[in-house]
Length: 118
Image (cartoon, rainbow, N blue to C red; front, side):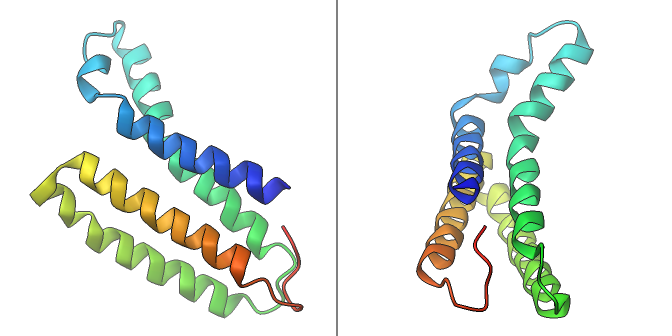
C-alpha cells in the first residue's frame, strides 16, 4: 500500500514538473518564494525517489547489490541528462517518467519470496 502511494506521488511529481513551465515561476516575487516553489516543483521527484529507495532497502541484509544497482541507476540517469542538452528538459522528464514506470513494473512483477513487501 505504501509503495503504491509513494510511486503515485513520484509519478505525479514528475508529471507536475513536466506540466509547470519554468517561465511561470520566473515572475514570482520575492526571489526566496520563487526559489522555494522551484525547489518543490523540480526536486519533489528526487525526494519521493529517495523515500522509495529507503523503504526498499529497509530490512535487506546484503546492501552491496542494492547500492550497486542504485549507483548504476544514477550513472544511467546522469548519462540521460545529456538528452536535455539535445532535446530540452521536458524530454528528460519524459525519460524520467518512463524509467520510474519501468521500475514500478519491475517491482510489481518481480516480487520474490525473499523480498519483504514495501
